[in-house]
Length: 483
Ligand code: BYC
Image (cartoon, rainbow, N blue to C red; front, side, top):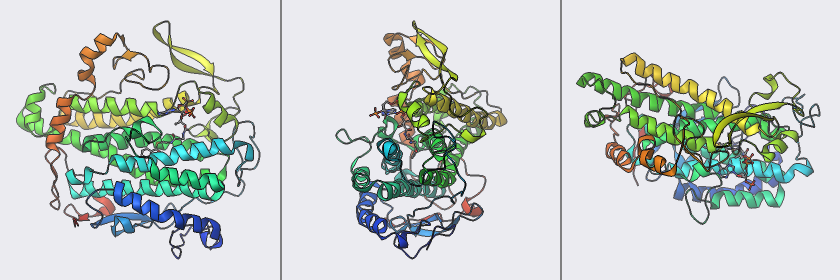
């Protein structure tokens, strides 16, 4: 079957890339498959592999009807290779090759760089599944449990997407990298995942929601930039991944939004006006807003690190070579080569944070991060609307980009959420006001009791406005069978 909008299910690996006519790649993927299933069974959602989960599966790449919903046991999910349709006249849209026809094969001189980008992208996908593997056990509802598993199987599919590119275009090296993606483990001291945030724990559901809001949103930005790639198969792959990514960010945004709703409703009902009366609020079995702010501070700062250094020669090379573009590259009104362009970068100068004009080419990471911050702020404003509606006097706010950083300009300084530079002692004295403390973690953990009755929700989170696939409130999203 040639490349098409419909997905071929006759092969073991559903695909729209004509795998039946590409026996070499089909065989390589079939050989990789058992290792993947092994990984999924040992590192995927623990305790629910025999449960029936109401999942969406991609069946087409037609934006109007690309997925179908049905009960599936996760290990039987049809992880497929799906690429957005080829645009016949697509060109390289930026960098020194601007105007050339988009590449259908890997340009030899860029092979190592391209492989690196694909491996880094691929590595994050299984990492997130590993980070979230114990959460099913404390799911606040069947609806949320289903959403977690949906995110997990789709991150698994995104791994398949990167592995396809490695197997198809990178020969022996690609096969080795594909194996490596199954070997590294999130948080493992000896063989950690590649990027910092993907080695952090996701200990509770609030972390999961913050992660899917902030870190999946980095995923969106990075995929958007890779979707601009002159290497057309990467572009097409990322374009389809973005279709799925939208739901992951929805899970995060509405998850936090519903947590806020439950908190504010409980405060109102109990007549508590002061959101900083933490003990009183916690007694209601909900998460106080200042703790939500701390969690946001943590996940935002960890996610900022994922953009790399503000000034990066790697990023300049990725752009110059046409491998990785800017967010919405083709909509930007400039020459798309940027030889003499400048871009303002937040830097530490003589102990002060200043905005300094730098060559735009080396400031690619900074620019993408700025676009990311704008996007995050819109989501935070939507959360603030939820608070505002209830009349509770509190606003969530993103911390300064210098706060709690481990990569780039600010990695060696301590800064408050307002961007004040601090001594180590000042930081140590106030850290627990800004980031979740052990006591905050213990409190949240105490709320993480499973709530698996149909249509019921844990005390700390409100019910969603509408069900998945328009299902009614008491729909059994997961038929739990704990083998
Ligand atoms: N942790 O020039 P620099 C997603 C390394 S999330 C550890 O500053 P560069 C998802 C860097 O690799 C999106 N190491 O940065 C979300 C380099 O090492 P080498 C994932 C880091 O290279 C939720 C050195 O430091 N996709 O999809 O311009 C769930 C100097 O690097 C980190 C991508 O990231 C870090 N945070 O940019 C599931 C897209 N940051 O090469 C999935 C592909 C930097 O000197 N990746 N380093 O050994 C890239 O575009 C780039 O690799 C980065 C780094 C943006 C990550």
